[in-house]
Length: 244
Image 1: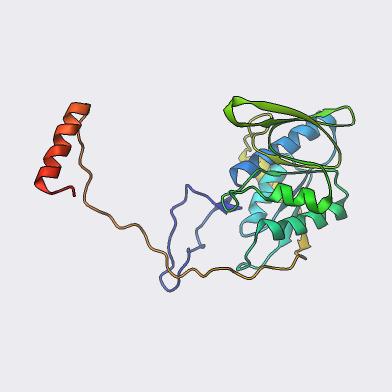
Image 2 (image 1 turned 120 degrees about the vertical axis):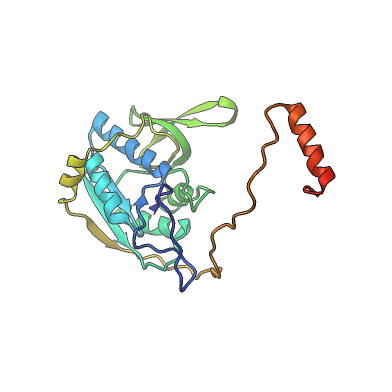
């Protein structure tokens, strides 16, 4: 879960941090793609989709997952001030995957707070399952999966994986579907299971001392629409001492 970037962020007056009272949370973009890929696989070949979430705002996001087509939802509980790293999340997700007897775990290739994209590799190592990150298309093939992986320079690699497996999804085979308000209302009545976080928490490695809004500077100056106009005005600014 992540704060909706479309929301206006309000700062607390008495402590360094964000005011969460009116803050909306959403599924991060890559996990959104992973959810859609899971539902597409279910529609193509059957099975059950279990949506798993943690952190503030998880309940509402899991309701959205149910409205999208997930069969069940599980929220694993964490303390509000916990430092939740990919390594810790991977241990908990792996334990839940084993308890539920799943044969495929799909997660976003990265998240806003995990740009290194370590969750899928950690899961693959802990579960000792084959894994692949940066996937762009997944389909059932023979006794496993046919998976496409995007690489640099417009190159796409194709693999066949045996199940069970872990995938870090970059792009789903189709764009995530729209969820109507009526489906969301229906999903809000469905139960969401809970699971306790079992992995050992990590001690914070830093301390937030201060948050502040950017200070407004003087208004910007247009240098004109052509290179000649821009160069002439820039030279004038240098001569006047306005630009050091």
